[in-house]
Length: 74
Picture 1 (spheres, rainbow, N blue to C red):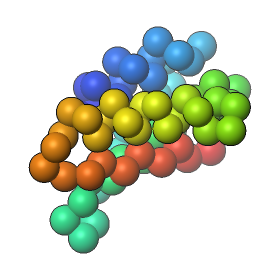
Picture 2 (cartoon, rainbow, N blue to C red):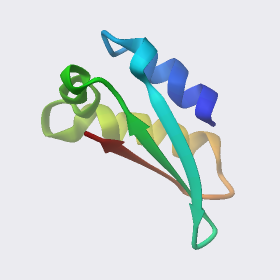
Picture 3 (cartoon, rainbow, N blue to C red):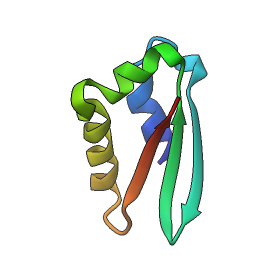
Picture 4 (cartoon, rainbow, N blue to C red):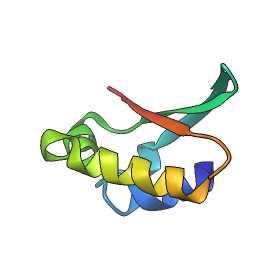
């Protein structure tokens, strides 16, 4: 899943070398923390959260057994 997140996000941001993805399990759910360069936060979130919601939709469509949570850390 981390590789999929990286592949999607690296095409959007200007500083792909600064992408960091952390995974942790909470209440039997997969949570991912995405850290990007401060200039790229707006690109990842998008207007009214459209881009980040689209990324979340793709992630959840690939993992039918569990819901995947993705949060952007500034």
